[in-house]
Length: 102
Image (cartoon, rainbow, N blue to C red):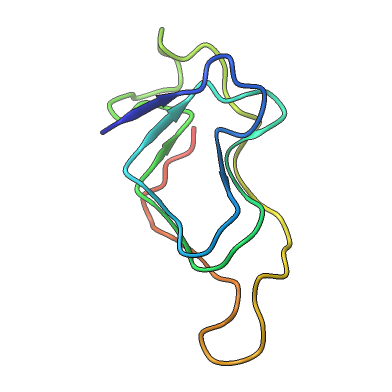
């Protein structure tokens, strides 16, 4: 599983601002204080699945030498106006069961 180490970042680790975006099978660690590992700010039909947010996949706890800080939020979703009337045209976020937060 790929590891994204956000040490040194001063913003959200990933920012979704488009339609049909997928973030899957990643380990996101060392996110910035006051921010999120994943922030959805715009768009529709995003899929976020099978990620480890703020923790490593094999960890039994959040204590690990590789983790020096954690983002304040695993994920945030802000209101947006990407959707419109009509079938299959609304704002939708697909979350899968195994997104793991510390």
